[in-house]
Length: 196
Image (cartoon, rainbow, N blue to C red; front, side):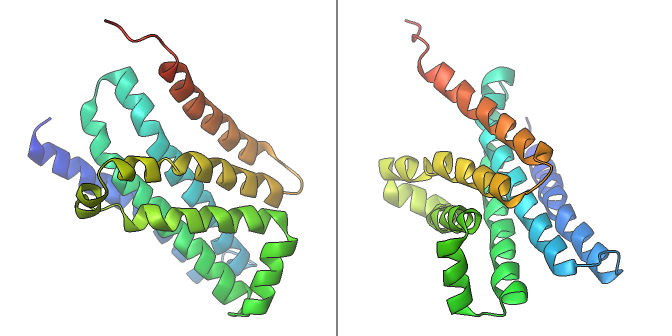
């Protein structure tokens, strides 16, 4: 793939990753939601999970299609996952809890879905901080070890969603299924005998 073509595709993906935020802003501003705070919280949480799963899908897609250029999109998708989870957490702590730290801490301790969601958020922070080329060079082999935290973060995020939903579990279970396939493929390939 030519560098200019790749640049255009990356720009298109970047814009596409911002569209859910633009859509949510439009819905809230136009008054289409009765409870805008809950809508923003749910929307940013959902798109955090979508971006996480998309970033995890890059390696399997590379292996299945042979398109090694796909690796160029993994960092962007991972950073968008952090962007949306930061918005998700900010909405919760600011608009929902009005910066009441005591209430937030009480929620984290007493409500399991918030406990695992907060844990996933905290674990994503070092991944976002170390996502630069400079940090990759500085950490060397430790960079890869650190970024394997995503294999814990993604299940925690899915669990957060499952425990949050009280009635219809269809959507969170779909995400759980996608995650199972993505992680299952990695396990399968890891245990396959190497050729030669």
